[in-house]
Image 1 (tube, rainbow, N blue to C red):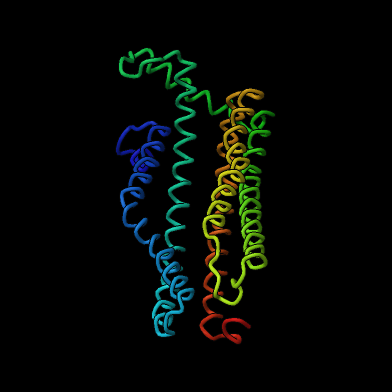
Image 2: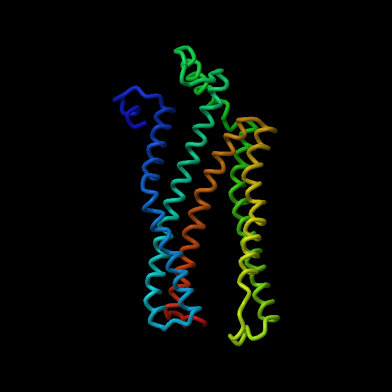
Length: 273
């Protein structure tokens, strides 16, 4: 795109945008191994701290793990930003690939490896005409964009509700074991870990069916009812609304997590107040 604007090379604006977005996505994904390693620090240290606390380890063990836990929260916040940026670029590439496939279908090009000069010209003209078909004065485009803008909020709200229901089921199981297992409250009895793991696994699988269906069925339904223009608008609307939502949830969660560690470190009365 920069070479096209500067006039140094004759590059089609659409293809230049696709190329630039692709290079940006590849650049971010090239360091995925390092980012995933950084993302794994937080859960490892967090679980180590939980094991140390439940096993009755000496206080100095927990004192050494707490700074590492805070560091893990910081690395998690950084890697969440990386994941959000990668997902945003992937969404843009998805829209560009979708538009290219629609243009290829309308130009009746079914084999890109054996494309002729006339077919290439038809494909370029179809790509140019698609911009007018995705204009906001089209009712299907407006409906698709509105549905896409709502989709991230519906999906995240349903997923968060599912997590809360799963946690409530686990709390009820813990209370039941405290009531029914002799000596568990005094520390002499042994809890039934298998049931707790079974409940959490089944809840995670069952309760996430609805969010998954929302993400899969909505584009299909919009495409069948309103056509491809509504699907393209849905992708753009979902991307535009999902990015600020992801930023809000990412930094809000990291701030609350670190605020908890800050209080546990002795501020505002310390842990348990």
